[in-house]
Amino acid sequence: MKSFWLNLPVKDINRSKVFFTALGFRFNTQQGNGPNSACLLLGDSNVICMLFDEPTFTKYISSETSIAKNATEVLLSLDAQSKEEVDEIAQKAIAAGGSSNHKPSEMKGFMYGCVFADLDGHRWNVLYMDMSKMSKH
Image (cartoon, one colour):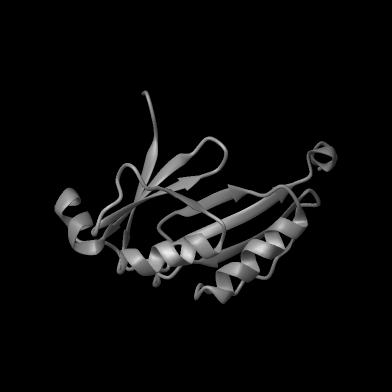
């Protein structure tokens, strides 16, 4: 396997681009970017998350998409560098139109995180892990 990327259906490419830009994410404007798609780049290694409008996405899969707002199909996790960064991204997600019923909190003594939903209901987990505390649990 040479590479790995994600594909997500969205209702409105432009609204999704505004949302993820407000969170501080970047897009590849050279490839995969068009009226029906956007190439979202994740993390330092630039993992690609292709956003496709729903009609385009369904053409690729030859089936219907699930309604992400009704159930969690996948949890997309992002590594934060600090608790403050978790809080900041969670606040930006809500301010940009996302939703969350999960306040940033400690988990298992070494993790601190928050789950939010983007405009289309896809769940994102922003997580800070204090590795110095990990071996104690």
